Structures are given as structure tokens and as C-alpha cells.
Length: 322
Length: 260
Image (cartoon, rainbow over all chains, first blue to last red; front, side, top):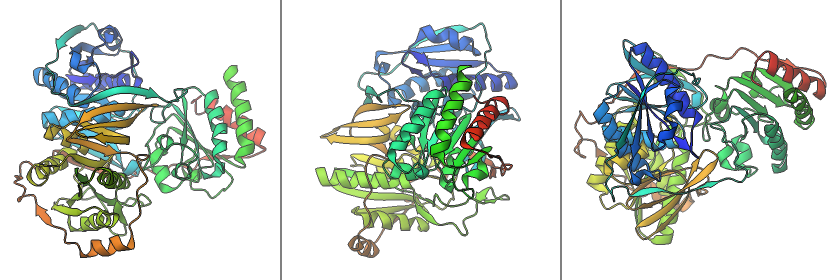
């Protein structure tokens, strides 16, 4: 069995969790094993997981888990893993997955693979490939202990419908009162509920070429026209104080793999390229034809972005309204 | 408040990475090494907490003798003490192995610590595993990817970055905190600090001295391949007026690339 941890945000299953479950189903099929999913609460969401290949859906319940805590969730998941002995446990490499998976790994005493972009079956066991140095190199590894724990990078693995007749197993998690010493007290949403660069399907990114913080308004307008688009930034733009660090893409920011990355006035410093070069399609607009960003771009426009962006906005509006 | 900050020596983020394909290792010749940038936020936060609440900040690194340079940097920034835990294995990419070493070191040498501070992740292995693993091995609460931290007595509040929002986490001390850009602005070393750091003796502790067995420090990861990504074929440069190039680009993104 390959078990996938399913994250719920605002009462809904996160897309990155469905991506992880879909990959678990594909690899489980290859290994001749079933796929399963585990939720903390949220029994009503089980049918969506059965529609994506989960032959068993475990629903863990305990009032101690009403607020998320890595410590409490790891206790509950470790108990389930010990009882069901899965060959592997997958998580999305989301903020929660990255917080929780290593805690569970340590509780189980197993090493793990973070932020994987490829999973393969070799001689009946899983093999993981993941970017290191923010994508300047790729590491392929096997885990020596069982279960194999891995977090899977969002936006890399396709979601696939795969309906299975399944079973829903409700369990009361054994998390004693007082055992959890820290938990989430509140979630504060940014005004406007912007999409995060780590999850966006399209990123509109700006660099020093924007010249002033106000220019990010242009990028936000462009992002608003595109579906599921977020605004990104180079380290130079963040360090200049033009935009918050949560938007930074690169080796000291976030490593991203959107379907489309629009680099506007981004020169392409090596540490920025590392963080975005695995994007599926890259567009660069820069007035310097020698800018390194053009080396990774699929489409490039050498020109003044203050003229190109308005024209691009018009064309996109026309095209997307058709 | 007794604070221990963990720091790691990593290749500069401006570095090009080359690979020894026979040994699956990174070519170190010609690389410039620095303290992992996220770790500087950890040091700075430790120094700020000490300033506000009193106490002591100790910087610890796990690695070879080369890691003494990043400990010197911590001393020059103002930490009180530094300790090197000598580990002769090169990068294993195994977070659990490192967390086991750190948890053992905390139990043996820093049992009275109130807080362990880490960078969000080390630049290089890009695991972001060690803080949460260490917290679990010690049975302490954790707050990772923190952009704001407040301590009052034995209680703490942290804000952590999640997708498109901030999570407010409350927890008790002792605890593990990992620092994210935005938490603070790390200070520069002062000349006085650099001079003092030069004179300071940094104790070197072996894994055996911590009571770690060969079994406990055996990597749980088998490295099968290490590769650099294939160079991308040259892209297409669109020419014309801004209106023409914009129109063509949108056509290509829809028709050829099919991404919008």
C-alpha cells in the first residue's frame, strides 16, 4: 500500500494533495499494490479521494487535532503507519507537508526524500529524484528503511481521475491531552488572498528592470488577467524592498515549477535561474539582449517592458475573452 | 534564555555546481563556501532574544574542520560560544542522520537549552527536514519557516509562512524554531567581533564523544545518481513592435506551447 496524506484547507482538499495521491496510485499500480489516503477529520471529502484511486480512506479523529500541529498530526499518523505498514507515505511538499513529513519520519525512525519531482519503481522499490542546489543539480536516491517517506513538489505530478470502489475507515487517534505542546492558533490571510508562487500555474515575475516598486502594480494587473497566476520577484527586487519576500523566486527564495513563467525585467542571476528553470514554458522580456534569462527562455522579447506589458495585457484580454 | 543556533557551511548561491560522476559528489574545487543564508536569520534572532531577555547564544555546526569558518562568522556577529561537532562524512543528503547527531548533542551538551534556532533549510541539500526531525527526537514543539517570533516566559508565539497566508502558532519552551527571510535583518560582523572571534577557541567534539554509535550515524539514503540538468535548446526571439511581439507571443502560448 502507498498511503497519501491529504491536506484540507478551508474545507477543501488541496490540489497538491490530489497530485500526490494520483502519483501514489500510478506507482502503486506499477508495484501491484493498492493506494490509500489519510485525512484528519473531513470524512465528507472521502468520495473525492476514492475518485482519485484511494481504495482505502482513513479518517483520523481526535479533538486534539482540531487545530493543526506537526507534533499532534505526527503522533496520529505514526500510529496509523505502524498498524497498516504501508510501503510508502506521500505528502505534497506544501507548507504543511514540509512541516509535518520530517516530524513523522523522525517519529518512525526513517530517512525521507524532500520535494521530489520524479518517482520511479526500480526492482520493486521506489526511487526518488529531487532537485538540489535549487535545481542546479538533480539527486536520484533510494531510501534504505521502510516506509519510504516523500514529499512531492506541487505542480509537477498530474492529477488523474481513477475511480475505485473503496472503504472508509474511521479511527480515533490516540493523542493524549497535554502531549501536544504547540499548535496553530489562527490563520491570517493576506488581503485579497493572493495565490502563492509555490502553487501558481502561472507566475508573472519582476526584477530590477521594473525600476520602481510601483511597477509591480503592472505585474499584478497582468497576473489578474491570467488564470491561477501569482506575482513573483527576483532577489534584487525583494532586497530593494519593492515587494515582500514571500514572492521571491530563487535559491534563497522559493523553487517553482509553474506551467508558464513570465520573467519581466529579470536579468537571470544564477541563483534566480536555479529556482525557476524547471518551469514548463519560460518567457523573458528584457531590454538587454545579452541577459542570461534568454538562455533559459522558450520565447524572448528584447524590448522595453513598459511598452510590452501593456500590449501583452491587451492581447491576453482579447485572447482569453474569446 | 539559553539559545543554541545551528549553522551549516554551503557553496555560495552564485556558484555553478559541477559533479564527480564516479562518486556522485559535488566538485568542491573552485567553489566559494559561505554560511547558509537562512542560518544568518537564526543567529540574528538568537542575538535579539538575548538582548531582550538575557542569557547566552551558542552556535553549533556539524561538519568537518572547514565548518570552523562559519562558526567564526557566528562569533564575529556576536554569539557567546561556538562548538564544532566533527563529522567526517561529506554531504549525505540525509536529514535524519543530522537530526540524530544534533538531538544527541543537545542532550549531552545543551540539555538546559530553551530554544534551538535553525535556518528554514540549508541551501544545497534543500531538505528542510532537520528542524522538525530534531524537535520530534527531543519531544519538543516546533515552529518552522518563521517570519515573526515573540517569547514571554516559557510561552512563545510565531508567525509562519504558508501558501498565501500566515499561520500564527503558539507553543511552549523548550522549542525548535526555523527562521525564514523576513524574520529580521542580519547584522554585519564588526571589526571588534572579527578580532574577538579570531582569539576564541572553538571546542571540537567527536561523534563518539557524544555517545553516537556507527549504527546511529549510518546514512539512511542511498545516492544513486547526481546530475546537472541538460542545457536547454535556444529559445525563439520574437521581433517587431511591442504590439506585434505581444500578439505573436499570445498566439504561441496558446497554439504552440498550450499553456494559456
